[in-house]
Amino acid sequence: MTEQINSSLLPVTILTGFLGAGKTTLINYLLENNHNEKTIIIENEYGPVNIDSNLLNVSTDIQIVEITNGCICCTIQGELTEALHQLHAKRIAGELHFDRLIIETTGLADPAPIIQTFFIDELIRETIQLDAIVTLVDAKHILTHLDEHRVALSQIGFADRIILTKTDCVDDEQKNHVINRLHHINHKAMIIEAVNGQLPKSAWLDIHAFDLSDELNINRGLFVIDTSQKHQSPGFKLIPLKKSHSLKNDEICTYLFEAKELNLKKIGSFMEQLVEHYGNDMLRYKGVLAIQGNAQRLVVQGVHKVVGFDYGSPWQNEQEKVSKLIVISRPLPFDELNQAFLKTMEI
Image 1 (cartoon, rainbow, N blue to C red):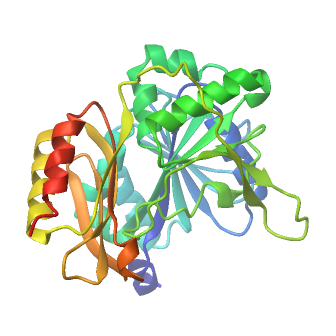
Image 2 (tube, rainbow, N blue to C red):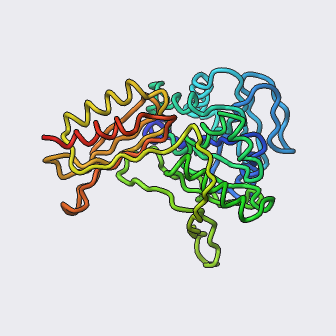
């Protein structure tokens, strides 16, 4: 039993979003409709917490509370790394049995320190796989939050998937404006509309966003759950974006670097300098690069100054060999950096 646990990575999803965005509602819907696996919900809060009417207020460092369908709530006060070590020890010892972790952050939390925990600590790296950062966005209040709270920008910038809530409280014009602004901040995250937190787990779990895959998608609109096929699993239906001419210039935005085949040594030096000088400002970045003399795609992915490289699948033909690097960041000297990026094509 111990060998089986050690050989498989435990998936973890970080669920974030500003106060009142609907994180608890989403989790409760999951718990009510997810009976085929055991999940630990980690409340990364300070002070007494109650995410469900059936839960007890807890105030110790780590308190495990059983939920009605067999899932577990774990409230953490203090060091997340130590708490994850303790949960791992309980799992190995057979004291706790669970299939995944979901970390619900406080609404005022910047997710950066939590994300970095999964890359810095050796035991956590070897036993836990960070699946995705999922950010809930309150369509009614997010424009105000973005204007007044820097952390709301950070939560959206880090997201692999954005779940838009309370769309029934806004008209089509404001909804479209919100979607465009989210898209401006984060081109990469899929935006999905949720009604009363009722989303199937396939919409936000097991996304594999942190796998070093060679997929590099740029979001082009709002996705809604397509339930037209009653006898099949729900899919996603894309609603294209309508252009908005009154977007605010947010502090965080998406940059796209694009070129042909790159010199491996020069792109390595470029990435090293980019991360060294601007890593603290770069929330998320991912690239699929064509390397001179190499038939495989080079995949690069990072969070702040933590970056990984790996080779992916081969290019199918010469025409598709285009290097793309997407960076979600606070303001960068893009023109200067883009010129340096283009120079990495030189032999």
